[in-house]
Length: 282
Image (cartoon, rainbow, N blue to C red; front, top):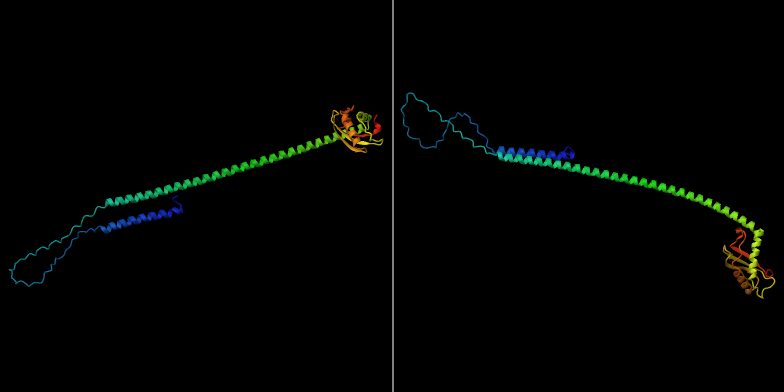
């Protein structure tokens, strides 16, 4: 701006420069122009130097009885030369000074416009930076809020899953306890005894005891069966007979598949443990 401290010094120097220029031009013009001579009335006696020569012979003149003095000659005054016409030069100098002043004013105007544009650019840049910062802060707040809600949902879901798991485990434990109680009750029931007797009777029908078996032969086997009684595995836990006796026991169990079904589903066992003795066969 023109009234700013950093602009006053250049403007003041420019004004002083123009004043000095005009002063020097007028001084040069005054020195170049001859000073006018003002006519003055001068009363003087013209004295003419006469070279020293021999005096001419004196001629006596007749004396005029009434002499009249001759008038003194008027002094010769020289006319001053005409003043030179320098109005065009002064006009051009004034126009140049005016153009320089206008150029300086235009330069200052353009500088003010540039400074204003720069200030507007910086202001817009600050506003854009503030807008972006505010937008980023808003997005960060939204992200944190979404993260907080997600963590709350995960925590709530985890607690709900834990509650359901505990309920399911409690139900399973209750079912297992109930099933175990029924199984224990069934193991000691006449129905279980009848079921086991039916299985043993079926295996005995297919057991061909070898000659190496003695009266004290005892074999304990586990039998794995499906829900329909189909046998899928036989394992001899212990047997005091030889290999022929063991093979005969395995063959008898496999030939008895499928095993008979219990009258009560609670009596069914997928894994049975049976004890076979020679005196049981008939």
